[in-house]
Image (cartoon, rainbow, N blue to C red; front, side, top):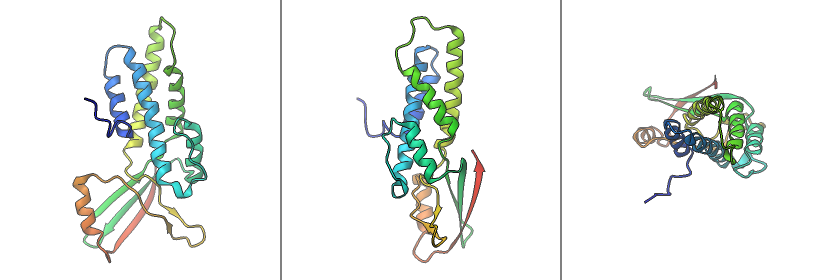
Length: 197
């Protein structure tokens, strides 16, 4: 029996794409293309949902280019934003916003043409090109999925202070320690830096 609870989460699309890429039959390349394209749609939708207060529109999830334009309007850096929270007892916790890169978005749009009926005979060179594009796209998608912050920390233009709440995905084994440190009145230093994608 298929459990639908997590079928449409970005990490599950990515996991299924990896499984498809590990198969020897060429037809699995098409399934990998579908899963990777859906990953990008789902990840961008996840980001837009977390950044709803800044969004002027919520493009349909299958409109990858429009989603990308709206996300770029909100946060136009093609860089990872890393926040390190350092508490008084030197406990340190890190969150990172990894945007969907232009390369990942462009590759996923190229994969769209693989989601239609294909010619009966596929040249070996075509399959090899497809495999290379899919592998590169999976690597970029996996890197994007490594970020646990769903929205970058933005500053209010009038006050210069941080705007909004941080929304992050924290594994259960790390959340208890973080909650213990985030009690009311806790003091911490937050260091922000930007890394290449």
